[in-house]
Image (tube, rainbow, N blue to C red):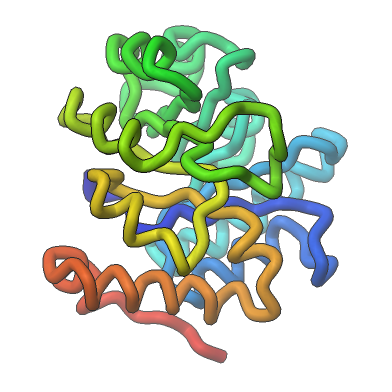
Length: 224
């Protein structure tokens, strides 16, 4: 899918730098990301809406897109490209009805049964994980590993996003297992320079996988 990059960063607050969601989004864009998720679970709706307005404006300047975690209503209000839904969020069909046919809708899955069920939904991609133990959600779901990831990716032509415990040290394992993208929170948001960290991921992908290099060749990054 053309909207997906090999790395799929997610905003997360609070974080070690004290950056807001909008500030993290700006870092993602400077690093070369053109698709990411705003994961704002604990802010008042008005505050989230205000940050989404900033993020949408920044994405417009970079020809980038973002989705909002969990909330189709905020995705619509904040001019996001779509929404990412968890297993306990609104059904995909309801989100599709609210957001329209062109919206990007992704869904999280944690085992084969959920993954297969998601394949029958009107989604643009399916996320699966955790692949490794996740510092963001320790112990909540059992890691499935790259062998299971490879089996699941072989079951569909939909792009699969791997998530959970992914770092620069192990990201090539999920790409080699067939994941179209690696969703990452802690290793990017928790780094001293999220923009530089994203560039590291994109450079690694380009060096290891030539088709990715072709996609990223003409992409401009702002290193200021």
